[in-house]
Length: 228
Image 1 (cartoon, rainbow, N blue to C red):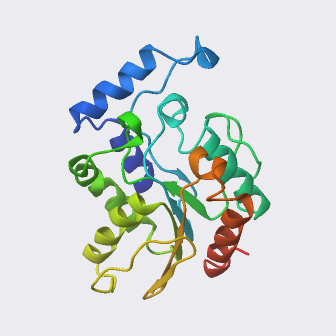
Image 2: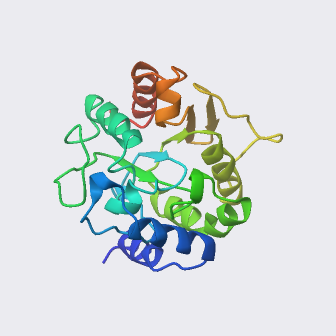
């Protein structure tokens, strides 16, 4: 087993946050009608994608009826529907839809990661939960570091979680730390960060974020990573 596969296996067994453990399992016991009869994953969700990724996409946390159900990052909810469609259009995903593990989806040079690995109530992890989970993000990025050249961060939560990890890893994060914003770019040695509003249904429905806006950021990051 590769080091990344070993890390993924360890993530799945994590039980460090009692509130998140209780919530992810409670959701699984009361599925939405659309998912009645499905067996929920209801465990921490590991990263997904290439082990030699040049591009990482950092989200927030698994959604209650998305990745907490399917066991794959951004899979099975509207946020993932938009993200995977853009990745496919950019040539980074083998298909435009991600329905569940075993659907044949492959990511090219790209890996999806999250600062918090369990579904939180109201999609809001606490600062303590974020910090408790931080070492998984740090370990995963350390394993990807030899090939990683660009990171797209979806939302302010991911941005705030990622910058301390990069600083602790020795990258030259400025002080004061760069503020998150859509379209913001920050060069840290040989790693380039890209800010993008989160691909949440709320951001899309309110018009704050469009398909085109996501595509522009992903294309720029893929170019910086040498994937397009």
